[in-house]
Amino acid sequence: SKVRPAVVVNAPHPSQDILIVPLTSKTESLLDGEFLLSGWSAAGLNVPTVVKRGLYTIHESLIIQAIGKLSDEDAECLEQSLRGWLGLIE
Image (cartoon, rainbow, N blue to C red; front, side, top):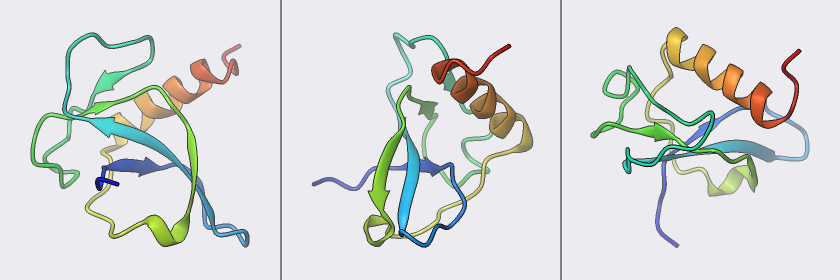
């Protein structure tokens, strides 16, 4: 399986399960809640990158390395997107 970038969205857990949101360099045809990272380069990414709609569970052993951190602005956008995708917006 190909190595793919993702954002880890949960704190470490005894189960060693990690929740991730996928990233992609395909910047066209965005779905509701998907967005282009404004700070993609500062986050350690090589090309303009989009947060994709999706929430996946993987085992922490599948994580190869951390490459960066989202900007505060991008983290806020991701939080709002997650709330929307999960139906948590009031």
